[in-house]
Length: 149
Image 1 (spheres, helix red, strand yellow):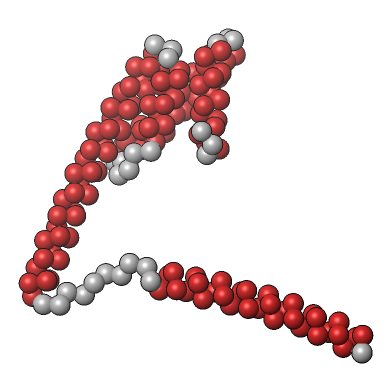
Image 2 (spheres, rainbow, N blue to C red; image 1 turned 180 degrees about the vertical axis):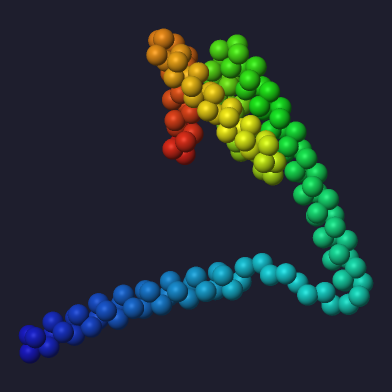
């Protein structure tokens, strides 16, 4: 009888864990199933409106990409200027800002990578020479790479 009660309590645990799993699965399916779906146009006028909205969104995306591209170039210039002036804090901030830009061209992405490499080399050299500001900037760079700013 004791064996039977242990088996029943074990079954209760399994059933409870199965119920929890099924509940979590149902919630996940509901969230995924209720996510935003593309609406099907009802009529020709709805289709035209939808096409205009899509064209507007494309234009907005292109404008954002151009702005992002210009911001990246500005950030890289700021980073170069700061690095030449040995303002390591500003150089780190500007380089990180350039990295966060969306829709970079291949050339800009390469320039951002090269800027980061140059920044790291300059920081290492300055730290080796005992520059406390360079160490602080390197710490900022390290924190940004680990995701905790």
